[in-house]
Image: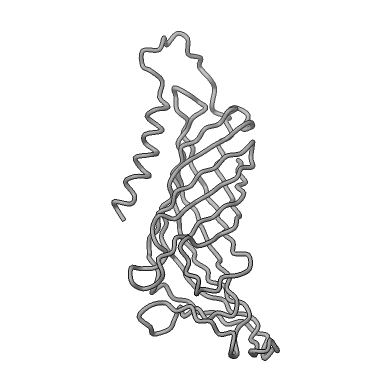
Amino acid sequence: MKKTLIVPVLLCLGFAAMAQENPKTDKKKKQNIDMSNRPSDHFMIQFGYTGWAGIPDTINKSGFSKSFNAYFLFDFPFKTNPKLSMAFGPGIASDHIVFSQTDVGIKRNTNTIQFTNVSDTNNYKKTKLATVYAEAPIEFRFSADPLNGKGLKAAIGVKVGLLINAHTRNTKYESSTSATIADHTLKESSKYFFNKNRISMQGRIGYGHVSLYGSYQLTPLFKDGLGPVVRPFSIGITLSGL
């Protein structure tokens, strides 16, 4: 995990270093700008589509899988260039992967997590696998109009997460002919098969308080040897403000 973290951290630091102005620049030409009332985009909410890179063909993923994230970031503008800043802070991130007629063996006593096609027997019509992380993003930001919080905005960074919950939610128990047997919900929870930590890269670009984001998890979702080598990714919309 340490080796995986080195590259994105160095990338962010490299961008920050490149953004600094030449110290030989004539200081008399610099203007003192009051940044005390600068909109800092502290609060961010993200909603998007989530998928698994590297998912085997044998896993019957279907429907709209989604992610929902919320962060509170502290923003620190560069003294040499107020259009650039570094931001970091805590947040919560969740992914919800949807399967059809599939038994996700999150609590089964097996060597690896099993995704079993159960379409030829009694089954739950829909199964959702949800993972929830306490997450800390670190972003290098650009804002074309930092004093008003408008104009073009872009950011690139890394997110470090700690798994706090993993569970499945199974709904609508049916027969193999799709006849309803019971309309109830079964929930199962276990973190055994999952990596407890994750590292993701993320980028954003937009205008004002709305932007598009994309993220890719660098670390595998499941522990080595306990599941398929899949890496979640997400694309969606970010709303920022305050």
